[in-house]
Image (cartoon, rainbow, N blue to C red; front, side):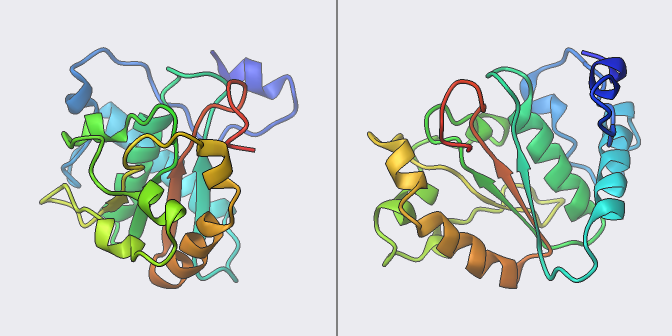
Length: 189
């Protein structure tokens, strides 16, 4: 809930995102020139993440998670991805919450469009064909999770996600993963 909650465990705070009540789609800062408090807080988070990154890495993978659902994982992952994209970085955002995907809601897409799940089921398919670019103002690329699978944990652990990440590392400066909550399901671990 606060900076003190984090610091009592001797952990660093990379950024603070204020709570704000507006319509879901208005929480996404699509305009790279936006100077609102929310966009600036994500730019600060992005700058701090970039400061901590390893210089020898061609592509950085960032997993966004939290303990339970409803804490803002998807919104934070999307806005952080848009922050990187707004400074000219090539970014892929992967919807990896296979049980309760929310990313499609923020970009007004049907949650059953082909996505990551299709490749996890059959690695002969080309996952890049399922990438969407929903914002005219930003070149952010998104791989939605796709249709709800009957066996999400098995899909995440079958090795095909590693194939996606290996190939994506060659194509993108940053890969952000919107994951499931850690306390509710084993998928994120």
